[in-house]
Image (cartoon, rainbow over all chains, first blue to last red; front, side):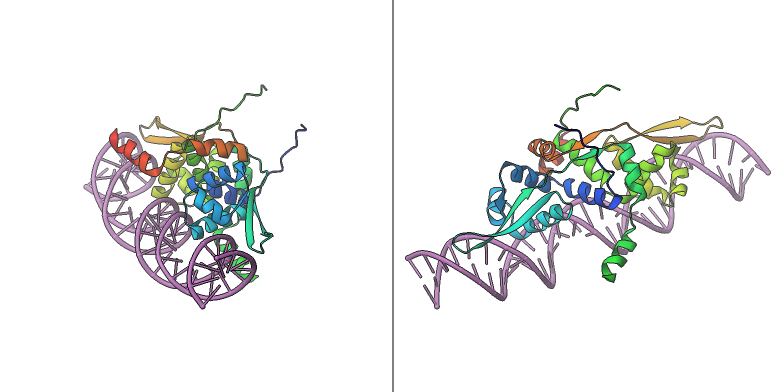
Length: 117
Length: 117
DNA sequence: AACACCTGTCAAAGTTTTCTGACACGTCTC
DNA sequence: GAGACGTGTCAGAAAACTTTGACAGGTGTT
């Protein structure tokens, strides 16, 4: 197994990842998806969570690049969204945090950019 | 430099760490403290943040074990609280998250335990 | 005594995140 | 057509987090 040097994550990326993982529900979701990929409704039943809520959490995890969703057509024609965990890897050290901190765009900037597009 | 195997963090510990670092201000605070240890008031001026607010953020970081504060008496008798970053190291992978997820105590449990002591 | 620092805490306000209960749309089966 | 699945979205309530300003205490200097 080759050791691959990790590129330093940007502040915004790391921020998305950390705040996505810093939530008990979302940790459990990652754990469940690592066990086996499933579709939203099944996962909602499995972990006992309302579907709209799970939808939101999955959104957050996907935005952080930690899971990926794929809309698949089942043989019976039903459209089902399958999710699986992405193979992420982050190292958390003071240095990494400090380097990331330099590239954090302010909330104001982020909002402005979003609105601009 | 010896490679030390990292013990798997508990769910609650990882949760505290991730939610502590998943905040732009707190990232910047870690970055500033890595540059040089300082005391609260000086740091507040340096990063342009109100002292009570900084106090709260430092609390959160310290609770997660990411920084350590020491109350020191200056020669002139003034009591000053110096903070510095702790040498932390966490690896974030799907497996680590999944293992941590198993040991998450529910919010209800945590609250009960806190009150019980 | 008044000022300039340092420390801490607290209540209230503001903002974001989380969560629920509808609703709308689609397919297939009875 | 009604029912059982699947998808997504939206508004509003509830809870958590962030932020401010004011207060109280400490020391040492003018």
